[in-house]
Length: 146
Length: 146
DNA sequence: CCGGATCCGTTTCGATACTG
DNA sequence: CAGTATCGAAACGGATCCGG
Image (cartoon, rainbow over all chains, first blue to last red; front, side, top):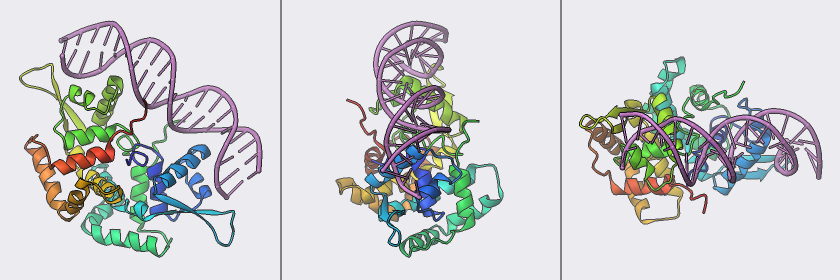
């Protein structure tokens, strides 16, 4: 079942940050600005691992550090996220990045293969900025208290 | 933000049942087999309405009955669900319907326009059975107690 | 009957503090 | 840095009640 990923407020954000931004470590997620609590973060990382979506690999140079990385199954979520992004752009009040995102609908396949290439080659340079911006807006925390 | 839909265990199931199966009424969702509590169901229907994803319209012949229906914004979620389904089929242990679903990847556009046509013409006949089966397997409740 | 609303016990979440 | 421990807050689930 995929309700470990969807049906949860954080898992999708983690996947996004791994895929679109170049996040790798516990710390990066923690200070991501979304304000996830450490225990929840730890729990979600575990569950995503159990679901075969991410994989923790100790860094070679420094055994203490752990680098989380999407598995093939994880990177295969890219089409879902991209469609979600397009959906949001289409129905959100107009905004600068929306027209850019809607253009992405046209080169859908091209963008997806670019995402996959980056993942395969461990290329962590920032992805298309409007992709990131759109994702942030679309999936951003809903600021629920104070 | 779209976290009213994703980031919740039930909303996506409701959208699925509206889109793929022909569900329309409170009762149908309630007895859907997923075992949603009536208060939660009422709450989610309200929230989906507030998000502009569904629309309640009283039936003409019988004012008591209410028919819930996806809005344009709601039916536009079809690509996301379809990709989610394909993702699940690709990574779930092989199963009869998987190969069918993977074929859907090829006629993605065709299937999406068929879904939209059904919605536009209020055609509630069952959709491609393997679509439904896949969705049920993919999004089905995780049987969490007893 | 249908579409909820209300009450209440239980489970899960989340913020903060703390630890190896 | 990468997590546990704790504990109050919120969400959930079951049962029951209610208006049309």
